Length: 113
Image 1 (tube, rainbow, N blue to C red):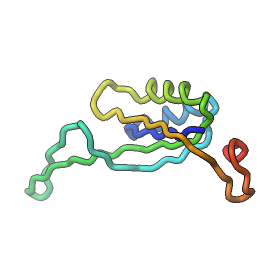
Image 2: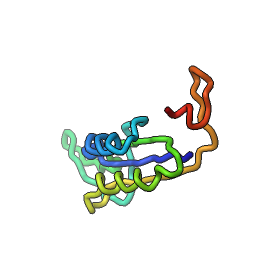
Image 3: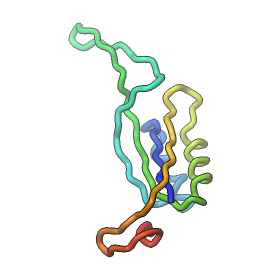
Image 4: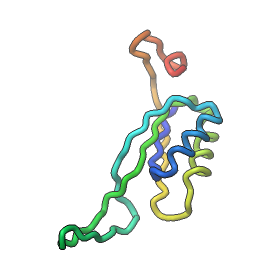
């Protein structure tokens, strides 16, 4: 099993959710996050005071999937979330040793279904 984490633009989330649903991915954890990266900061003015904005709002989408599902999921994320501009995001894939369902004590793939 693998954990896929994608940090994406907020406006891409609804389309990504629909595309993942189309390929059978229905278990997601979604969080609003703030990130800083290669995007240049913006300058703002609030009540006459200048300030620099270096954190940008993003959405973090996490899922645990079987190894054979990684390539189609990464492809969907790349196709859906690419604007070819800085700030499109990142995808992280990590190994997962085990998964347990708390309610039933199932583990492994049975805990994901």
